[in-house]
Length: 337
Image (cartoon, rainbow, N blue to C red; front, side, top):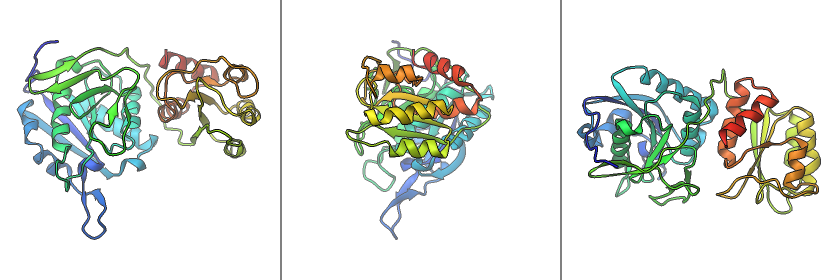
């Protein structure tokens, strides 16, 4: 690792704001935090942005709360980022975002954007009315990563609390702590300090998607001890676009789920199987109704190490790309190798 403080100085960074806590203040009328800090004001709150790049460009995409951002909106954010990245003067893009679904949007950008230039997602755990508002520091750190030459070709990244995480592995681990974002399976890919931006390792490139649309009729169902098959039966009756199942352990579900899963697959509704465990991947070992080996024999798609929310994003874009069942299976195999 080498000191690179100021690398790419003179290049532009494009900031795309979408709302979230980093853009929120307490509403005196209700006492609740709501998006209220516009893009221009957010840049003013982070004066150190200009210490590492000569030009800061800002696009206000929206003032959204991140729990209202779905795959269709993620595609639109990706489109704005893609257009910005076409400009030779732009070294990289920073997307500000609420933390509740940040990992999903970051993963979506990783799947949808195929350029070498960095795309960095950041936000805040404290709003602008709170003491110790962490938004400006996170924004400045994200911009430093976005213009750093060593960030090129690493896929979408999440920068929070002076750590750099690969979008595919990062998750929110605590409801309120500043250090909530972590990559339990792999650890952070790098960090930022007063001397520079430091990368520890480089993830392999992900396969990319170019969907015509996002299939929003994709549902996530989590296995719980004693849960009946009501939700799966309802999804079958509704003829949904796809289903992701967060199974227990290495990929097992209650025996009463066997028939609805078989029926979903028979109805050409793709079923992706992942684990509800925070680390590890699907391993089809157990037989009998609901056992992982039996489910694979039925034709479930192996979601590997993906957590449920990210598997759902991937399936949404796969279906929006018009892939058939075998193409879908091959894509997930490549994605999770």
